[in-house]
Length: 355
View 1: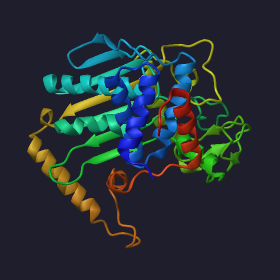
View 2: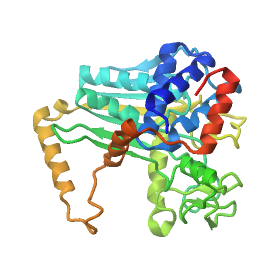
View 3: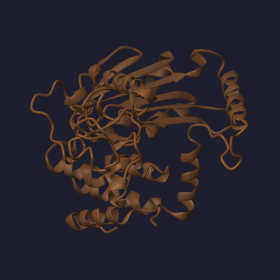
């Protein structure tokens, strides 16, 4: 087990070692290790080696000039200047929140960025202001559309965070695929198969091979197949791709630059880097804030009281699992798989940082 502080300090030192100023390195580590705390191990410290790899091939700018290149009172487009998405995303979300404070809502698209960690970190920033937060991003093209064999979309997550008065907030954070690629990486490290419905092989056939995507196959949209409504997952992933990348001027669809090591960026990009999209909405732009927050408390309380199928598995609201995991891991520590520890020790030896 490792403490949050141990992993945060290690990640910060690695980000500094690849050229980031200390404040930016800490910001990146805040986002990265929050994933481990919340039980989203696929997007936490296990990804650190991947960010370093992108820096080594000059796809990460450690000293970016992140700037607004187009805006109105309620909208903005941000050029991340090839920054870590872990850095550019919180900056862009803060712009959306500031615009919402002024005019009721703020909407920010980002181009020329990179992988931004867990979507929920950014949407939850709005909760500190009693606002509704929205966060989404396109990602490595690993997903085949329904009826297709080609990898055309990313796992393209969506997160929505909604404040409450006394109850815990509603925090949805989900990929638009049946499973995120990071879940495949965890199974690969454990030498386990996937469930059916996660992956198809290079010919479009269902497979349980956790290495199926590396071997020319593809991840499947949410639903897994047409009979289980994979077309709806395909639609959701497409919406995220358009909002995040077509709207901002980033690369979209199969042109999105990959994070995974077994794919190279395409030679003919249609935009700049990866794209993100953020929204912040002031509740009192719609109705008195206290009334809404009280109603959200009632919503949460009533859904928690839903009659369960199995009394050992009560109905949860989005965000419950992650909150429970964070509470446990802050006390008992964060577990890491042996291959992840090996990767971190290798990084430490390379940059003279001790885990």
